[in-house]
Amino acid sequence: MILGKNFSNLKIILVEPNGPLNVGSVARLCSNFEVDELRIVSPKCDIFSLEAKKMALKGQKFLEHCKIFDDLQKAIFDCDLVLASCGRIDVKKDSFFVSSEDIFDWTLSFKKINNLAIIFGREDRGLTNSELLLANKTFNIPTSQNNPSLNLSHAVSIVLYELNKSSNRNFDQELKVFNLASSKQIHDSFLEIEELLFKVGYLLKHTSKAKISKFKNFILRANTSMHEVNVLRGIVHQINWSLNNSKKNK
Image (tube, rainbow, N blue to C red; front, side):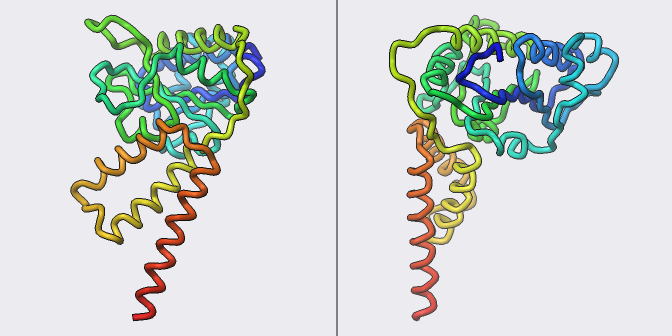
């Protein structure tokens, strides 16, 4: 694989693309860089159109065999590490955005990552805040502040080029074993956490989304491991058990 031995099964995920030319161009890039699979969430155009096929050239097989999902969560839940691209420059201080170069250097500090996914948002408005929080890490491609938005296929080409370039560099430090909690593990944990916090009265309907987003942001920035997430879920389960049994004993 051209992207190096650190990765296996790289998935490129497009969310609601509305231009068949862009989709075809991305399929061609998947062929150029030997990506494993193209996944598309709720396409807003005919991805099998003649326009898309003409742009894809040798990448037509990625159109023919692409997997289509109606929900982003379903598209990423078999992936160990999920990265999301975002073109925004007006990010908050507590955000976890990093540059594309830094994110790929970090990614390549691990010995091997199975099922790596990179998400790209809509041409006109990118990814929502909720969708960004489904990723382990979010990165941006540094551009002019006067015109920060990139064409979808151009963004994909830059990311694949930088990932390939990083994978061919020699790193002095010893590579770490990848043990980060997956997007699915974190998502499932937060469903349980949110339910518990509603039960004890900490969360209210009108403020729950903002509070949970901040907590989830913190967990993502902390590079939480699978073991740490399991400990957190164990605590939640024990509190739930205690609450349920205390009600029975009254």
